[in-house]
Every structure is written in C-alpha cells, then in structure tokens.
Image (tube, rainbow, N blue to C red):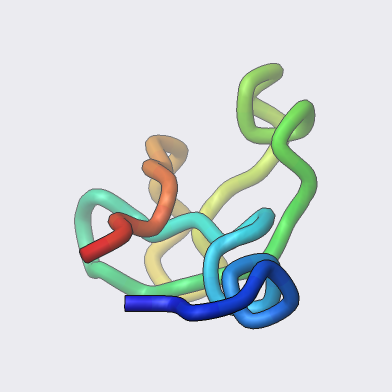
Amino acid sequence: MVKFPEANARLFKDIFVCRKCKSKMRTNNMKVLAGNVRCRKCKYGSLRPKKKK
C-alpha cells in the first residue's frame, strides 16, 4: 500500500484505534503499553495499533 517510508511513518507510526468506538488517536507506544492512555471519545482503556492493509 505505502511506497516509501515517510508515508508509512505518517500513516501508521504511533496511531492507535479504540477497540470500542473505533476512533483513532496518535500517542506514544510506551504510554499505551503502560495503560496510561484512554480513548478521548468514550474513555475506554483498550487500544490497538492501526492495521496495515
């Protein structure tokens, strides 16, 4: 899908998706692993990385 690394970083680096409401947010990977980040929209605590198609 992505042809060059700059576009890959812009589209997928540090972007996570809420498992409940599917909203996207850009945040640090270590904060997500530590559980310090919650969804802005529904306040759910479980996030997943954005899938690469």
